[in-house]
Amino acid sequence: KNLKIAPAPYVIGLTGCMGSGKTSVRQYLQKMGATTIDADQLGHETYKPGGAAYHRIIQNFGQDILLKDGTINRNALGKNVFGNNAMLKRLTDIVWPETAILVKQKIDDAGVEGKAICVVDAAVLLEAGWIDMVHEVWLLLMPEEEALKRIVSRDKLSENEAKKRLASQWSDAQRLRYANVVLCTLWEPDITEKQVGLVNI
Image 1 (tube, helix red, strand yellow):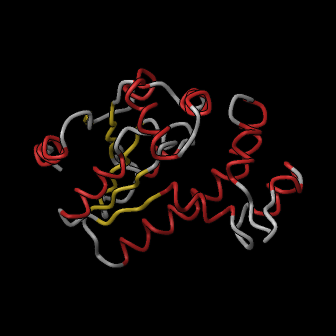
Image 2 (cartoon, rainbow, N blue to C red):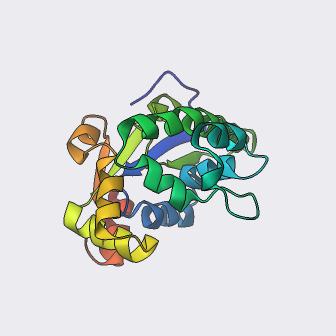
Image 3 (cartoon, rainbow, N blue to C red):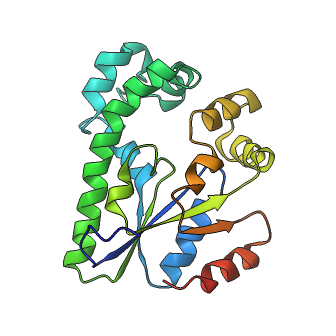
C-alpha cells in the first residue's frame, strides 16, 4: 500500500479492462458512503471544446475527426489510434496528464470536504502511472471472451474494434502485480456486491 501520500482521504484505485464491471463496483462503493471519481468521464471532458486537450488533439490528428458542431468524434479518433501504438501514444501523451490534473483536483476536493474514502475508477490507472495518487489498487478480473461481449453490446462496436481496444490496455497478468484486492463481476450482481462487502477498507 502507498504510504507516501496524505492518509486522508483514503484513496482506492479501481481498475480493470474494458467491460470488467468497474462501474458496478464503483456504484456499490458509493452506496457504502465512498466518494467516487470517474476518471474516464473526466478524460472525456478534456476532449470537449474548451477542454485542456481539445486543441492539441486537433493539431495532432487533423480536422477530419471533428463533427459539424466542432466537437471531437471520439469514434473516428478511436479508429485512427486503436491498433496503431504510435498514434495511441501520441493521444495518451496529450490526454492522460490533463486527466490526471482533474483527478487530483477531485481527490483534493474530497479531502477538503472531509471525506474518508475516495474511489478513483480508471481503466488506465496503471498504464498512465496514476498509482502514486492512490493508497491501494482494486483489480477487477474478467475473461476476455466475456469482456468482448460486454464491450460490443455496450459500446456498439464490432468484435474486431473491441479486440483492438482491449489489446491497447495492459493484460490482467500485468495488472495483478500491483493489485491489493482482486474481484470479479462475472456472476450475478448480488455476488459482486457480497465480494465488495467482504473487503476490509
